[in-house]
Structure formats: C-alpha cells, structure tokens
Image: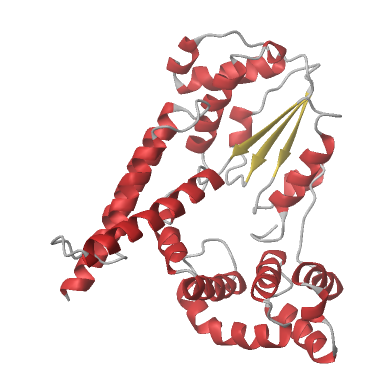
Length: 335
C-alpha cells in the first residue's frame, strides 16, 4: 500500500499480539536497501551471540566477518533456532533482497512478514498478500472522533468540517492521525482546523517532494504542526532542525529529553553571560552549535547496550548538524 496507510502500524500490532505466545523472537528489519539490512543483521548477530536459544555462542570474532558471512551466519542460526521466530522486513524496496536474507529449508520454525509500497503480481497471487488502502469516509470520521476528542468533532458544523477534511486528505490514516493530534493538543475544533489546514496548503506545497513517498495531505499537516510548534516552543523547533540532519532510527526519547535539556541550560547560561558583559554576545539561536557539541559529548555515555558504531555515528551527526545550523545563523547575522 501507499505511504501513510498504516502498514508498519498494522504489523507492529500483530507483533505485540503474538509475542511471546506464538513467537519467542521477533526481529524488525529496516529493509529500504541491502546496506540497511546488512547493518541490522550485523546488529542482530551481536545480540544472538549471547542467546543459546537461537544457536548462539559468545564470540566477538563474529562482528569482524564479511557481509556475506554475517548474512549466512544469521540465516544459519535462525534455521537452527529452537524457538519460533518472526522476521519483519519493513518498507522493502527490492523484493529480490528476500532471496539473499530470508532463511530457507525444511522444518524451519519461523515466519516472514513484508511491508512494501510496491505491489508485485506474483506475490499477490502466491504469498497471501494483504493490500491496504485508505479508509472509507466512515472510518476516517471515527478515527477523528476517537483521536481528536469528541468535543472537537461534535455538532453539525464540526461534522461537516470533518467530512470535508477527510475528503481533502484523501482519507489517508497518517494525515488524519496528525490532524487529530493537532486538534487534541491545541484544543482546536474541526471547523477551525479545516480553515488552518486550507491556509497551510500553500506552505505544504513547498514541503511536498521533501516529504518523500507521502502525499500532499501529509506535507500540509506537517507544515501546520511545525508552525504551531514554533509558536509554542522555539527551542523545540530548533531541536527538530538539528535532528533533521540525522537518520530517524536512533532518535530515542532519551536523546530528545537530553537535547532539550542541554539546549535550555545552554541558552540560560549564554543569557547570563550576556547580562554580565563578559564580552560574549551570542544569540539563543547560535547556541545550537554549542548545544550540539554538549549532546555529542553526552552521547559518549550512552547505555552499554548501544553499539560503538552507533555511538560514534550519533556523535558525528550531531556535531555536523550543529555546525551547519551555526553556519546558517552566522550567515543570517552577517547579512
């Protein structure tokens, strides 16, 4: 199905409902490319090395193996596993990758689930494919009622506005979910949200295409939400800009909390320095660079479960992002 219809959310729910009753091991893989799959397999092998139930033995030498050896080793250990397992290939772009990464053989004790935007006729005919589409109008309205708060969708005017909003968003679950979250967070009724959404479509047009593989309705919803975040908390908006330079997979709640905390403390410190006339005249925005370095240092003390490669990558990304933001702020100030 297309982006935003809820493929990953549906499989996530399936995993929660069937672990551990049906599957003793659930493995979620980022399947956008061969490189992302290899990265996840390498991480998986490190975890499996300590788990005898999946045929593992503690061996640090496993992490020094070649890509082919890593993939072969993971497949072998899954084949020998004594517990039922589920492999989830999320957002698969190239179906041929399954030939290389899926364990095969008689008596295997696992299942494979694939989410993808690309529909292949052969898969539909022979592999029990479920094609997800957008909601119908009644489902869309029910989602808004449950998620936005009944008081924001209740009444004749709000019902008409909700119906029009669903049509404008193409009944896309992701866009509707974002609209519902906005209405609940800002305590805005659907009539008012519809007006704001229409006004935001011009800004959404500029984001469309940058929000890769998603519809204009998602871009417009993102634009509207970002505008509200910037009004409510400029610091949060600056943090989002910093994080936009990073890949999404390792952005955890721990990272967000520490980044926000570091940014606020740094702004307070710089404000105090400027008041005391210490010779520094740094704006709140330019402190993003220093904040990035502070967090990069904090990332060095990530929990022991974090892999060294991820820790180094996180630090490098934060430093690079903060330098770019600082560079942009400096340019603006000079202008």
